[in-house]
Image 1 (tube, rainbow, N blue to C red):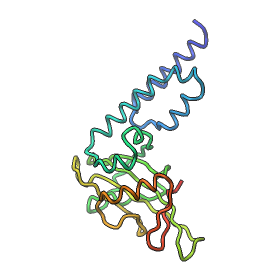
Image 2 (spheres, rainbow, N blue to C red):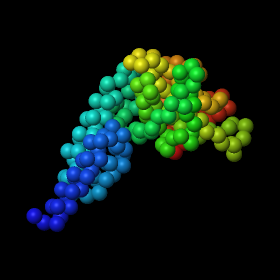
Image 3 (cartoon, rainbow, N blue to C red):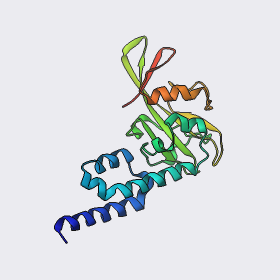
Length: 198
């Protein structure tokens, strides 16, 4: 047995152990970059990669996700690329809406989590420019979440006054807006220009 084989085996065991303990929260984009370093690394880790993807898809399918929301992200496979963040119970307001998430809580423009009531949520972090003063910038977060555990109603939570949504309820009409946002297009709402805060 060569030193390379021992190294490969240890590398695989260490990664496998880490992923087994926390497989839902592995950052798929970073993991993809790791396995694509070279053909050798890819061959070692490809089965582990498939396993992570399958578990993440199973995780998302275990929730009652509105089909329009799945469409926003382009399907379950694309949803596996969304980074996870740790939920804090202080994110829940007095009406049980998830409306206390601020931009500094989020490391990526789009993230997901699950609250203490087992409600799935997605966050969108925005950088906003103002029509009356293009030098003025502000930030905002829109949280899209299940209103009730296991329920089919999806709503928005907002800590900021400047929001992309017009009503607290997610509607089919919102799909086009959010798909444009994911495609990094600018959305204008009255005197505000919304872009993902990348």
